[in-house]
Length: 149
Image (tube, rainbow, N blue to C red; front, side, top):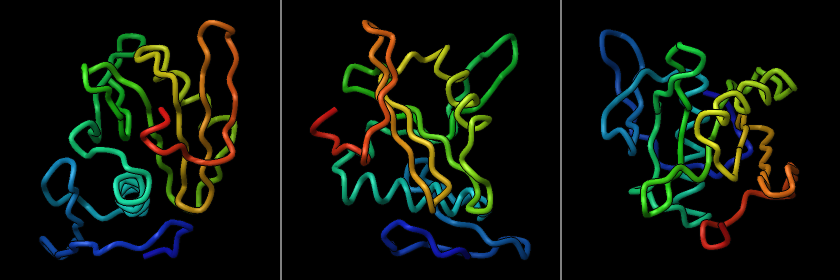
């Protein structure tokens, strides 16, 4: 697959009907190994193993209703009380993170109203904090450790 700017991990990859599949530790099943899924699995392992995010509070492919249509957030981090805290949007490494991608995750956030958003294509990573009191979005220099959220 692609080399990413994320730490490597022991990927569990198999073939099903001549299609590569990778084990998703959050969904606990094999899923199609697409470039975006390669990024997702690397990023999830990074958050868990390097940033201390509990896998029990994370989920992949979360459905939401937006303007009468079903959309899916790539990953969502929850607080221990079940409220959403972070949305993570992944793109294939060949997709540039731009305003269109940022607008996509912001539209999901109209539904979930989380304080943190992350965008990653595996090469570039952007994280912002939304302060709903001041109505300001601040881009952070790095992905925060779970303990600081």
